[in-house]
Each structure stands twice: as structure tokens, then as C-alpha cells.
Amino acid sequence: MKVIALVLVGLLCVSAETQTRSPGQLLVDHINSLILSIRNEQTEHDDIYTVQQRECGDELGFRKKEVQDAVDALTRATEHKGRAQAAHASATADLIRVKTYQQILEDQIEFITTRRNDRATNFNKKVQNINTSLSLIDGAEQIVNEFANASASFVQVTKHFNNMFLQATKAGNASEYAPLLSVLVELGGDGNVSVDNIQRIRQLLNELREKLQAALSELTDNENTQIEVFQARKNRVQDVITLLVNVQGQLTAYIAQLQATITKEEDIINSATSKRIRNQNLLNYASDMCNAFNTEYNDSTGARRKEVELLTKLRTFVEQRVEEFNQYGGDPTDVFASYAKQGSAQAAEAQFLQLRANLRARK
Image (cartoon, rainbow, N blue to C red; front, side, top):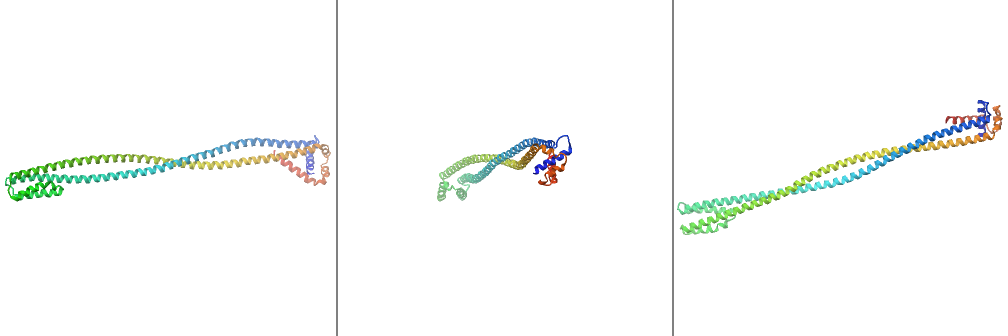
């Protein structure tokens, strides 16, 4: 057997080193030394592995926490960004509606202002017509007085009154002059200028003046009322426009704030994504490294266990045949000669020397 040959080679080797103990005892001592060395190496590796396990636990726990923190931050930022984007869209739509309402109200102010200006123009025309008519009435009274004193002709009277009728037609109140027209027709028919006719003309002129003055007063009061109504309505609309302008400012500021929030959350998302990827990579690396530690420890521990088992078997084998091994303490060639049938003695010696070198290399 090769194991026996290795043991015998060990016996020859230790025999060459000292003669104070028997070859068998020296070989057992040497095997025990190797077993102790392997066990010490295992103890050292156990200590290192314990530190590695603790550090791996710390590192893996830290990286997992960093990954989870990044995932939580990413989730929160995504939710915040979504809410901010929804609020941004809603506020933007509100701003568009507010601007639309403002434009409608501004158009309304423009419309009522244009209508007010048109009515003011019409009012001024009517006032001008009334004032012209009143001026003509004043002139008619004068020329009637002159006609009564024979200082003015009927032709002059007729001409002046024609101007009055034309002005009345222009003003749209020619019907008011019908009684006066009837008196003039009578006056021109008989050619006599009676006191009654002159008095009748003066009375009709006074009545016309009073009607025109009353119409002017009513027209002026109505115009003033319309101006007040217009101004009140314009002020109300303008107040609403001012309110809408303020709302626009608030919405614009709010939209800017939401946009800043969206940008901030996007930065957080990018940062959290980078953090998650970075720590996930480090977690994967640490996991691979810790798995490598486990593999190395398990493989090394298993290899040492097998070595100890082998050496223990060798020691048992030597202890059971210590007397037999002692017989080969004198001449090494006797050992190899006894096992020549098992194989080459030189090969057995080389195998043992290689095994011992491997075991010593672990110290």
C-alpha cells in the first residue's frame, strides 16, 4: 500500500534526523505536529472567517439599507413629482381660464364704453338741436315783435319760421310746431296783423320753449343717469378684472413654485436612482466577495479535515505497527526492499516528501 510506503519513508527521514527516539515514535510525533499545525491553521482561519462574517454582515446590512433608502426616496420623489405635475396642469388650466375670463370682461368694457360714447354723441347732437331750436325761438320772438311794430315784413317772418321748421324737422319734433304753423297760415291768408294773432304766436313760442327746455332737462337727467349706470357697471367689471389679475399673479407664482418642486423632485429621483444603482452594485460585489469567503472557508476547512483524517489514519497505522517500524531504523534500504513488491521505493519516498512539503507550506 502507498500509505504504508509513505509512513516508512517518513520513518527513514526522521531516523536520519535523531537517534534519541525510535523511528516509529518519531514518525508519530511528526504526524502529530502536522495535525496540530493544520488545526492551528484552521483556528486562525476560523478567527479570520469570524471577522469576515461580521464585516460581511455589516457591509451587506449597510448596503441593503442604502438600497432601501434609495428606493424609498425614489418612491417618495416620484409620488411628489406626480402630485406636483397634476397640480401644475390644473393650475395652468385655471390660469388659461382666468385669462379668458379677463379678456371677455375687457371686451365687455370696450363694448359698453363704445356704446356709452355713441350715446354721448347722440346726446350732444340732441342738446345741440334743442339749443339751436331755443335760439331760433328767441329770434322768432324778436322778429315777431318787429313785425308787430311794422319794422319787419311778413316775408322776413316767414323766412325765419321756415328755418325753425327745418330745424324742427331735423330734430324730429316738427309736430310740435303744427299749431304755430296754423297761425302763420291764417296770418298770411288775410294779411291782417291782429293783436290776437301776435299774442297767439308769442304764446305758442313760449310753449315751444318750455317744451324744449323740459325735453333738454329730461334728456340731461337721463344722460346723467346713464353715465352713472355705465360708470357703476364699468367699475364692477373693472373690480372683477383686478381680482382676476391678482389671481393670475397668484397662479403664476404657484405654477413657478410647482415647477421648482418638479425640478427638485427630478433631481432627487436622479440622485436616488444613482444611489440605488451604485449601492446595488456594491451590494452585489460584497455578496460575491462574501460568497467567495464562504467558499474558500468551506473548501479549506474540508481540505484540512481530509488531511487530518488522512494523517490520523497514518498515525493509527504507525502506532499499531510501531515495533515493525522500529525494525527498519538501521538500514533504509531494508524498508524499501520489504515493499519492493508494492512499487518503486524511490517513488514512495518522493510522494511522502511532496506530501510533507505541502503540509509544511501551510504553516
